[in-house]
Image 1 (spheres, rainbow, N blue to C red):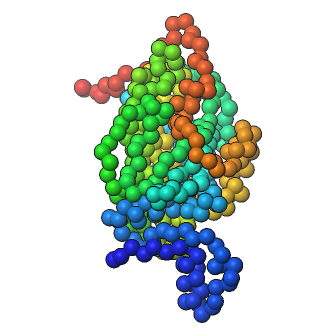
Image 2: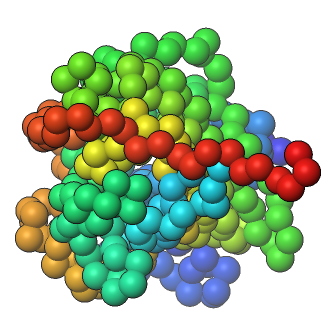
Image 3: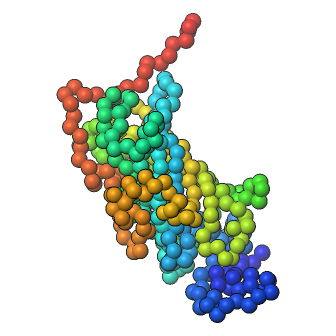
Length: 335
């Protein structure tokens, strides 16, 4: 079926005609925001427009809040997975349309860590692997921008550290029709690139010379919202997981093992008012900017690991310190 290009204003006008009413003059004055609504998983333009409507709001005068909430666990050999702390935060996004029809996503994001027992936002934490109390450093990325176009975006460069340049290919994402008239989208990224925290300098913070990081997202949305020509943003919820080295502020050094985040996320129609009050207060205490999306494109776009290298200093290394090790393998009776 031929793509349906329709503006937000035209969509509202069609709805008014269908209802037997006449669109008000003020409605006709609204700016045109064209996007593709006719579902076609194999159409790069539909992929571009629909993914942009998930990630932000096609109306550049509006910002989109997203929330994230879940748990981070530690994974080592020869022991059960260990819950470490809860995770909660938010992002604020603005989209700007480029001349070629692509969208530039402008994002700030901030994530705090909560105590498993009290639920309070932590500024310090007792590391169960080392029995050392360490200072907690929240995730605070400003900005993390990328372009949503008809071609798959390049992997993040993290300030030039990641030099992976896959072949250019059309943006054809992993969409599926789901039960109850829903649509789901799976996205993933698997990275292996030089660590900004090299172990020669960051003895206690660095997991090694290379970072191995993977992230997996599943978005759930209503089919009716996807095809709605009046919606410049598609409400959604989803699941996010991240496999990443020990967080640098845990001071684990090159200890065997890693962190796994298991979280839910989604868009937030209520904006700031829909967030936990203590999360908003903690973000505002750091800087008012965290409650607002960028209005201009700037960079570089770095992850929390690269920002840590720029903003923190190496911890002292106690005499005789060595990274914590997992338990010895379990020996079963008779083996």
